[in-house]
Image (tube, rainbow, N blue to C red; front, side, top):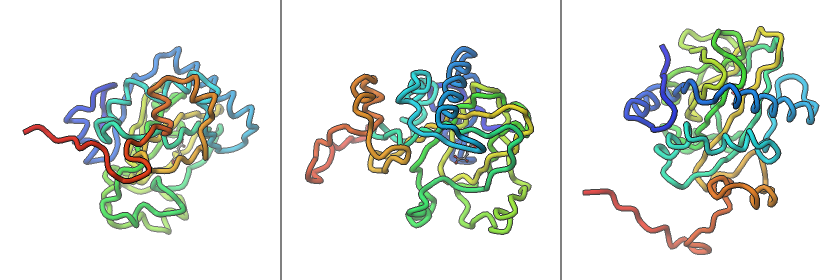
Length: 260
Ligand SMILES: O=C(O)CCC(=O)C(=O)O
């Protein structure tokens, strides 16, 4: 059983599955050529940074065109717009390496260590919508998959601390099995972890995180001006430096009235 979606439009069924489980799996987003380009770019980033063990590198889109192209991928962007409307930013983009023979990661919800999203209310709002592009095959369990707990974004209780500390399995854990080129699309409040990786090669995944425009970016304090100059208008917008029509006062944006 999987919350399978298709590239592009956020359908009514997508909305139902996303509301129910907190995530979707979209197979067949990247071509084989795109997977190879993005994988080579990810390996270059980690080699240049000399990472060892499990590691995440941000801002790879500034230097790697293949990773820049995923910022506004047409398979994913319509779904982000369906959930947020037109005003959102790329809060961060992380290139994650799970090393060969890497162990289980820790269970967590996404958010900010500086200010727990739970303080904002219940249900935890959608603030970091993530599209994770799998760049190595994860068709079978123990290939560095993500493990999700379906529906846990609506749980009013925490995953027990003892289970988290011991990195134990839970009966409702769902190991996401999908080939390279698939996207896992999920709500920040879903409990999840990196699953074990028994392969003798490093596993790479590119995570793109979209947020409302007032959330601070976490992979950068400032945008790179050269990148802003040369990228496309849509990507420049998603970097967040757009003008506010109401600045410096809070006069508000034009109101959009619904039909009828
Ligand atoms: O292993 C990964 O690629 C994702 C890790 C994770 O859960 C996260 O970045 O929040």
